[in-house]
Image (cartoon, rainbow, N blue to C red; front, side, top):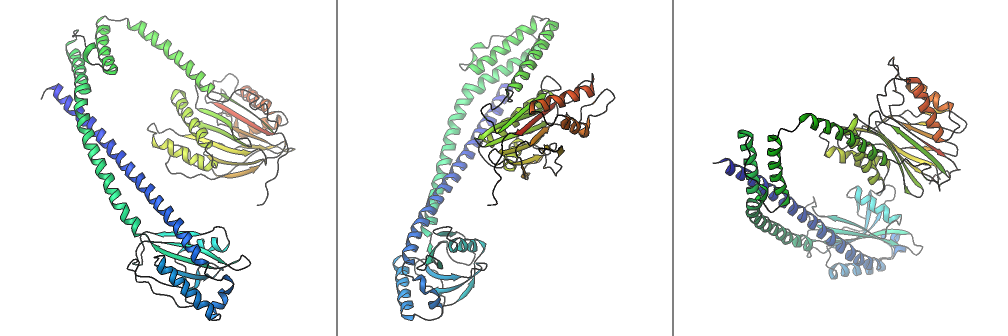
Length: 548
């Protein structure tokens, strides 16, 4: 087999195999989604219809006489109600109707009042309970639903048992409350209805979907194979063969520009032609190297501008807001850095604040930083607590993190009305908090794991209350770990001293003061790490959150 034939065969298998795999995945996804949709539709329909049936049956039960029924009194009314429920059970084609009074201590036990049974509906073998028969709740799900009905938190509750473990057939149980004349729930009516129609309807649907997916995969695979071999694989193989020939012979070959009608392949062929021409012309390598160096410098400059523009750097950031003031700064150690901060309003009364530090430096850290920043802001605007947001971002990063990079993040969401801030810490430096009239102090606590390290990590939400005059200071390790020529660190203690020296100033002046103190300490020593800071001050009185 020639080189050209081997390439065509290999590329055909890879391309067609990938296409078939994608089609199978797509078909399976469609089948699963469709299956879930039709199941949900059936469940909603069964739930609604059975509720109305159960509610109608509950109208026959006098909620004021539940105790009398259980004590054996009001026999005439009891027998009349029992007869009406038995008629409902037969006419409505349900397996069972049972009226129970649940022990409200823990909702784990109930006593039977009425229990007509209709085994002919689904070939069941249910036995009617006697009056006063006591039994424990099936599971916690039933206990929770009993509680919800007695506490009148829901008009009705429904339980689907698609795979019963007691030998019975799949069924739905709908529960409605029975109230006395004062509106108090005294009992619960439960109606059990078989769902055989739903189970039987799903099988042909699933078979239909699978058969259609199979036909579609076969048809598309055949058509794609014919098209790809002629339009793509053949021309690409010719281009590869020419590149191999040139590498071996080092002579100019025939032009490949007209090898295909597709721009991508034609451009590839043109590139091969250009490569041969340029290599044979013996281009001045020194000039090219100089040009490349200048290009890299220009690209780094553009990258630094892009990174700077991706962070909020216009202050005051919210000139129309008088309830808080925020200021931030970032000084990268190289042209671009891995630190970043962010702040944005999720809603009018919700301010998100982010401080993060990516492992490594330079272009890789900058790219990772921008990706993480976009993920955090996008997910935060969808709602949720800081712990939920960090868990989502960690999962997203871990999916595609071949470089094994990670990022530490401090994320808080401030309710600007109450001053309550909920925050989560993914391996980042502890925040410093200033209480009006006091000193800046570090809030030392256990951190969560860094983002991008381990998939599936959960984070913990914590809370702080900020009032008028209080300040929050966030930073990266480039501040306390800034070093002088003697390799001595600035340290957290010096940072706190600097903060407390400028504690009465505005957020902007506090950051300027800390930066000046760090610069004075390190003097002419080169900056080793990015240095990023953020300060938030509450300017107006906040409303203390209620106990409820």
